[in-house]
Image (cartoon, rainbow, N blue to C red):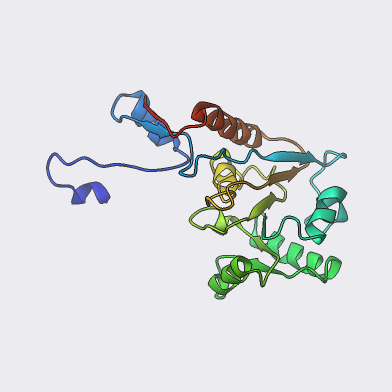
Length: 220
């Protein structure tokens, strides 16, 4: 639809942090040129996800004490990771996890964000301002938002139908977006490490390696 708005001979620019298969196809066929910027505007590296695998190899319920490693739970309760976003694969999982955490961690100021909720904007502002410690969220918040100082946990990150490589990279990209707070932590919690999880971490490491401490670009 957008291409129909172009004047004859006009050129378009597509900007994305996670090129799709179609984008790569256009580049490999020589139809598009690609310029890659491997570093953020503040010059600091992208946060590399840390993976925690549950010992029994089975995906823990979002209402299970085994969902979070004990050391991570302790840090959450000490608010060392606040503001915090906890991503879940579905709205149902989000509601279950929110109820469970509100009972398990009654002192933690926590709420749920999903597409069907009207007060999402107010809750986001609450997290930004420090009125909330954490938000449980679907992939609704995987892109398009900046929360200074935020850290991220992806629960059931091995849900491959939801957490693709591109989605995981976008989620990790919520962390360290501002010059004042350019770093943070990203955690993938899962029963097994999926190809998407491995690929997302590899993509981020490659971008950091190519940056070489200076904003750079190259054309493929």
